[in-house]
Length: 107
Image 1 (cartoon, rainbow, N blue to C red):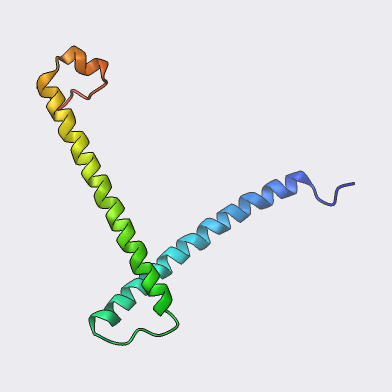
Image 2 (cartoon, rainbow, N blue to C red):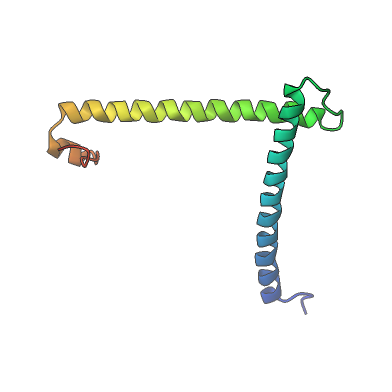
């Protein structure tokens, strides 16, 4: 006889996922507050506590990577929109429809 009931395990997993999401939200909130606090410390040229120094250095690197990825995505979307605009000027409505390019901006 198994030592656990499958229904119990399934129910427990659902609760665990919910708890994990809640902990992740709380963690994100705390990280945001810590980031804001350390920025104030840095802006006032105060020493960053040794306990958070390594975290702060890594956090700044992650922020830099995230901002670079966001900028790259903005540039990609701009290039895509520019390409669509160029196609709208050169292709017929039927050709645009075949390519599934949105025509509702056209008059």
